[in-house]
Image (cartoon, rainbow, N blue to C red):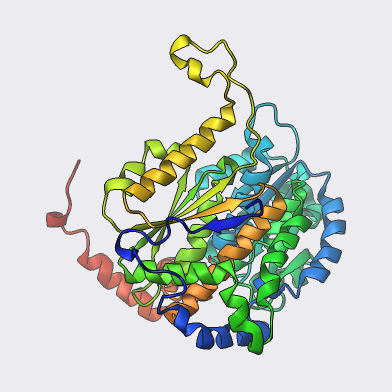
Length: 456
Ligand code: PA5
């Protein structure tokens, strides 16, 4: 098969032997899940799929990209879904920045609150050469806002009134402090469309503004995702048929089977080396969407071949609790030929090329995982360009949503992570958090007793 596809040969192994997507009890839920999915599509609750914002974005983005092209640096302030997609795209399609002799535009992604790193950026970036892009759907995420307050002061100090020309805010269309900031300060802004949560937003301005700045073919990303989505955008009457034929449904059913058979971890093993940050992007998507009410499976990103020499031993012969999404592409450039000057001991490499090694190792690892009983679906990409990446991202997002629906949980919220945020805010004295402040006081008073402390 030459088009990209899923290879199911090793999907139902070990404890799942004899099962199939068709015979799964999850497949029997297609009627109910299909109705719910189609209703969400119709009501505009799945904009990652229907992309109602696409035409507007395609109009708005090009003049902004023209405007920011002269800047040597983009400093992106954002976290979680507001950063991981951009980083995956940057690493996949703009490897130049990590290579010797780089002189083109650079993207710096501030998705952590490390004083040292922020200080280093302020010490080495020239404000006049830098566009600061602040991305937050809620417009109130403390990590992003805190970085923004400091960077805004840095810009103002150096640039005076023109600081405003160096800032673009990407945030909710109506709500949140960043939206208010855009209005109050007349700052350039782009919307994060309604109902598009962070981890589903990579193919909106959230991921495509930084991607476009780097010269990545952002329209192809959209086109690829749209092509994966199109068969799923059907009326309720046709949704069961559409799902049955769609790989996202098959993956969701498989994920349900994995969980049911106590495969509590899902490896995302990328053998497209430049795409290894897709693993981090996928992990957030999967974990934050599905880790609810004691359910879900733990995503484990891994990079082929690097991780063959680190964690693969555990994948193969550790606890039998792992399934694997294995990502390959047979059309990657193979690079240099080894040639006849290889030492005699290695002369069997002479007629091979460097890229043959990656393919052989991908095959070897895939087969070894199978032999060790790891249920595995091989995602075979036809190419590793932007269109293909859009297809993969679209597939992963739909598979995640459908898995959530199959598990009976809401895949677009993340209620549990709010607690830690509220407690941190309370610790810093934010108002309206009396209960959190009290429980923090109790927690800190109880903790740190001498009998619990061990020096090393
Ligand atoms: O996927 C999500 O919804 C989260 O990971 C958010 O992206 C993250 O918490 C940052 O939120 P915000 O974009 O509102 O700043």
